[in-house]
Image 1 (cartoon, rainbow, N blue to C red):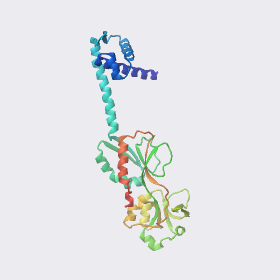
Image 2: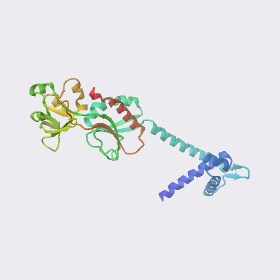
Image 3: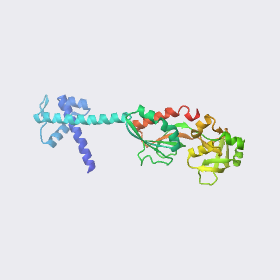
Image 4: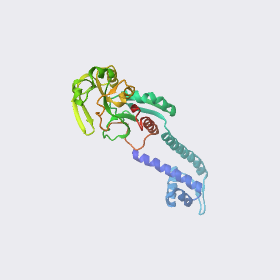
Length: 310
């Protein structure tokens, strides 16, 4: 039943558009050129329209087609309806083309606070028609169910039907404070890490395993986890306080490495393999202008060289 109503509405619009075209052109032949349809098709539409309304709209002769009195009144009303529909289409197209509306973001907690939040005022100033609703969370947000426009995710994107754009690479590196290295000495090989206090992220194991690589070389080291946490900033604070060697993403420790508060340990080794900062969007080929503007803006911040690498 709903399908019949949709078809009926479409048929009515076609009838109205045909009526306006014939009335303006003064003949079915001229109107057919404008609409690209056979004159007989247009004639049948007008006949169907007149039967549905129960009035004659056009006065036909062998040489000319004119409007009846009621046809002239109907033409005025129909032109208003079609103009309003055209305005509605244009308004929606303009809205889709211009960055505007509420932009819903899902940002990794620490990364979002360190590298996105401080610069959001610049984005808002450049796009005054956008307002932001941002979640700072390490929870894997369901961007479809929660109507998220853009999610920033860290790591290697997993196939999920979502659309992803890589924004910048990052590496997970080993580092410690100068004070810690002065007291305990710097490890010379990955095996030496087993003799040091480790600062790392909570894992199912009580003693985490660090998987390191140096080119084609791979090794696994089980560390003595002096402090394990699910919050990178807490681990960073512990490392700065001299509590141990930290394995963390360079985006978390980049500033501290640059100013010497932390020092790379085993600089030829890292724990990353193709990891990156990614912008993830709901599936679909049409990206709203507000989302596209945000992603382009983040890309200019993170590339060509990520800011945490100096």
